[in-house]
Image (cartoon, helix red, strand yellow):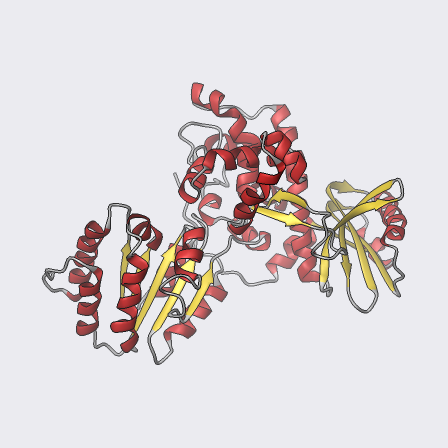
Length: 467
């Protein structure tokens, strides 16, 4: 059973939509983002108390959708259905009928479903906007879609017939960790990190976690059982977005197993290395994969690694995809002690993203990120380097465990040694740690070290307003 919690955050999105709503002219907004991210809930929240016609498109073709939309319009105006069999006539009718002082919001949700079955739809809506809606200052058209690729190429790109018509757009992104904390105020910060590592900041997935059950009970129920809603989700998302989901699945599986360089990914995927960049670029555009370079290198450097950016896909391909046969044979695969250790290791890796997010908002540095490389025969890696043009630098290490003050001092000494690998002179140097828990952190701070733990992350999140 899905537990629906109250609407969390989205203040920036709501503010932009409200500002657009008060414009004294026609509004045309494009809302898009990955599936399950909360676009429809956002639009419902925004349209509360406002005259709205909401239409959810499906894949049954243009005529079927026109007939369904016709019923929605008739119900809104409390009038008999008009004998229209195309979108142009329906929108023309709406323009003729609506003379209210408030803007009428017209929402077409899952717009890509219309385009998928009829590639003339963008041209049809261009005509609707140009010939009818643009002349009505009291109408607000919103096209919404979950197919990120189709929305960016078929609606937003300069090649689309609709290019230049919109008055605004917004890509709805998953929540950040500090926002996810607002979903689970009753849980410990450690458990919220585990949940975030498994599903990221996607509201639909977060709502599936029952706070009255343990984290691993939730994993078994949602991921490792045939009836679990997240068991088929990885394959479903790839099929909905991509034409060749099998190849992309192979690539993502190799990355989930630890491959980061193009040569490694290609080898594990049994592909030619020259063919891989095409697929990686598509995964980057969809926000599933990210290319990472050392923060102090130029963006054009060849020292690049690839990682699965989306926590859900990372978790699904690492822990669910390899167990599909076993899950199919049994109603539920239990989480063994060995799997718990592996999940804890995986969580420690995703904890690094939590730390970077926290420090990005805490510190005043324009450049922040991971740094790695070689100096002679020595290889080094620093979890986070923050630098600026004023020759200030800060080096951080991240640890998903409890640390004593002495352990922290040893780690900081190691960071000081790593500073020499940067081959630069800085007038101001700082060293710090972010860990699950740090004992004696106040004394460490008095010594000038930047030490934080999950308690600090949690307190920082509480000081912000999310809902």
